[in-house]
Length: 114
Length: 116
Image (tube, rainbow over all chains, first blue to last red):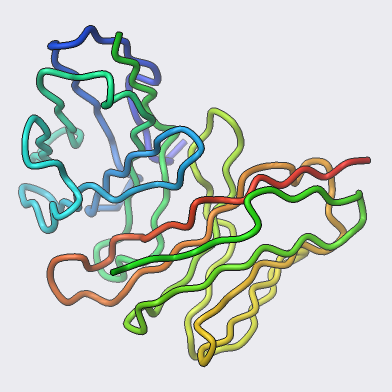
């Protein structure tokens, strides 16, 4: 299956711990986007990355959140010192480099902070 | 303010009926309008998309109608089936021009229930 892969699918962290969410884009896609979905809400953009570059992080909280997309390996969304308000579904999407328009989503990581 | 407003919040349709979901946007720089379907516990799946140079696009039972002057677009699901029961999201994005580009701005979703 050449779809977007995310892991883990479910992640439970205690307040103050770190959460690392991983995303492998579709084969041939070099652009990755992270979105957050709160219960009963639409998805909110967080960050847009290309290999080794953060292109747009305008939706990312200024503190505790960071993202990377290294030359080799998956994209990582890192949340330090998690708080209960970070509990949400985090989705990764990928697109082809040239168009950037058709974004295909992964199954998401459901983060629960206890 | 980049916003996409979606209605209704929930919709119940009889099997075989037409489901209609509406969205309105404010930013005239938006030039790409996709619809996504999401089942519980799954990621959003791209259903159909339109650009403002056409007023309608049809793929199977799914049709997008687009009204550029009114800044509105809608999804029509013909012959709705119980398997269509899901949450539908409209979204919009703009061409690359620096920060804010390509990101999808989503509506809040419509929960569709198709009853037999």
